[in-house]
Each structure stands twice: as C-alpha cells, then as structure tokens.
Image (cartoon, rainbow, N blue to C red; front, side, top):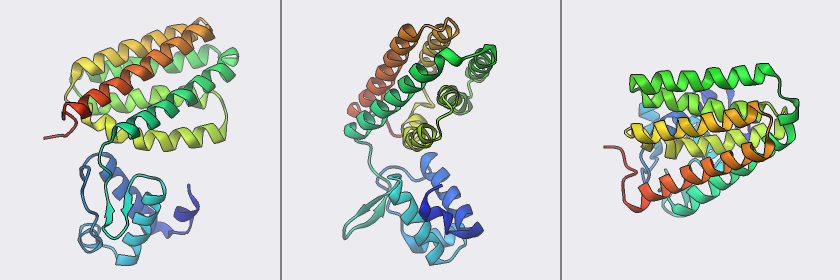
Length: 224
C-alpha cells in the first residue's frame, strides 16, 4: 500500500480498487480520458474521492497525467512492454537464484497445483481465469524468496502486466504455449537446477515480450 492510499479511508480505498480493477480489465481502453464528473456518477462518490483515487493511480503509473490535457489511460507503447517485462524477468530470476536451494516438496506441490488449475481453465476455454492462475504461478515463485521488497516491486509490475494480459484472452494457442513454458520452468525447479530454471524463465519472458510487441505492431492489441 502506497502512502497515498494509506490516507484514503474506507470509501476512498473501495473506489480506488474498483477503478484500478476496471482499468486493468480494459473497461477503460488505452487513450480513455478519465473525466472526474463522469467518474463521480459511475462510482457514486464525491469529486474529491475520485481525485484522490486518480492521483494514486497516476503515482503507480496505471494512469497518465498529461500536462494541460487531464488524466488518461496510457496508450500501449513498445517501450512500456520492454520495461515491464524486462523488470518482471529480472525479479523472477533473482527470486529463483536466491531461493531455489531452499525449496521443499511443498513448493513443488503448489506450483504443480497452479499449473493443473491453469490447464483446467484452458481446457474449459476460460482464458481470463486461466490468466489468473498464470499470474499466481509467477507470484508463487516470487513469494518463495520471502523478500518483502521483491514482492512489493513484483506486485507493482503485475498491475502493469495485466493491461497487456487482457488483450490475449481471445488467443487459446498463446495460452497453451504459455502453459507449456510454465511446465518446463516447473520441471527445472523440481530438479533444483538453477541454470536450467533461469534459462527457461528467460526464454518465457522473451516469448511474452515479443508476443505483445507483435500484437502492438500489427494492431491486434485492442479488444472488440
């Protein structure tokens, strides 16, 4: 929780969380102007409450304050994809390198269960829920490092990552490929092979990064 959100109060936090979720779920597509008056009507709160929520989301980089033009949902940019996934990759590699030697069968069991759940929802065709389990896989790897600062940074990156993830919900082949990569990472972790686990994680991160850049370049990133 940031310093800005600590002082919001219960109603402010509720609005902040609802607005944040709606942005990450693409209810407000890239380029949408966040007009305070309209948001007050939608969320049924005062202008000051909306303003505090918008300020906090700007501070997190989820919204963009364009000088003289107001606040808007950022457009998808190649540099954003590169920055987010480069950092996501670095954080996960650090987590593996610093914690793999301490893994137990419980760690293996948790990752296996997450992958099984992801496959279950992939088979059902529920790609949105599959993505939730995809994120849990990566969060678990970071959690295993027991580093609160690492976890805080990763959670921030996950918020940015979700803006890209939501554009892949119409692509089961991508979901299948991603799960297969997760299984390879899991197998390397089970063997406690740091070198192979890091290699598989880096290849996975590069794949995801290239996938979203391709969608952006070919204008396939918007949801109809």
